[in-house]
Image (cartoon, rainbow, N blue to C red):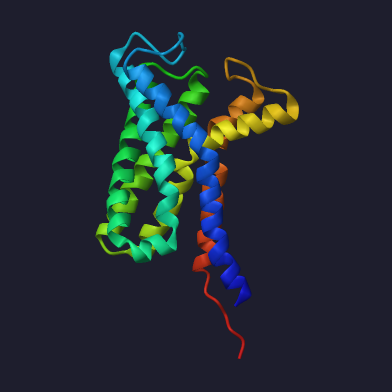
Length: 223
């Protein structure tokens, strides 16, 4: 009983903590994205290109991605789902649309411009975008079909994918703090850089799948 009660308090606390830590990144992404769309960045940046479509894709990607990062943790609060189902549904629609725009914007940029890290980063980040598209589509598809358990599973996958851009920066911050930037360079071609091309989302998805597999495992009660 005490364990169940502790879990009920721990989950919302961890979600709120994640939102608090991610909030500076959200503000930065929105500010940078709208500055890029207005061609009003304070100084030249490698992301900006001569291709207007690529610019629209990447800077819109930043703004909508920030919105997803901010809102998606709220969807996992059991109390909000139970007490404010209408809010849960409408905010969910906003998240799904924003996630789709985020993924498509990033994929457009990769296709037209490519990333600074070259082929390896292109592949890793393109796969990330495709997985967001799949997770967002599956989340809403199962919700509309009334398959609530499958909806929750895909929503959990989308949650970790939505935090990916923030986790990418967290990984770099911790790595540079611990090693001073070992195996990393401005061209993003070092050993750590290459690992990070999928390291900011694949390990978390593996963790989700292990958790879901354990949750589905039948409980055998001894007489």
